[in-house]
Amino acid sequence: MGCVAHKRQAIWHGEEDLNDEYSKPLRMTLNIKQTLLLRAAKLLHGKDKLAVALKVPEPLLDAWMSGAVDMPDVKMPRLSTILNKAGDQTRGGFS
Image (cartoon, rainbow, N blue to C red; front, side, top):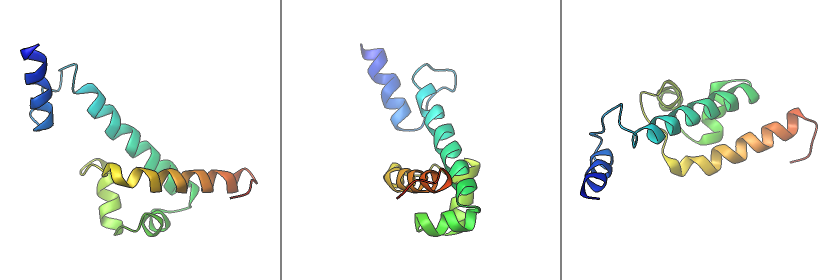
């Protein structure tokens, strides 16, 4: 049990081994966020419109999309709303 706690603590501090089983969900989360950001930009017809919708500067959005900076989890509900509304509009639904 001490080993597991140590590995989790290492991940918390950003010292995870890239081959460690505990780091896989962290990498997957980043990829999911990037994928959702790319999808939202496509649905809104541009990164500039997505940046406005997320209320962030476009250079920061670029950093999130490239994976250089991890998008904060606090932005996920807003991104979800954007995706839902944009998806409804492209399917002819109502917001």
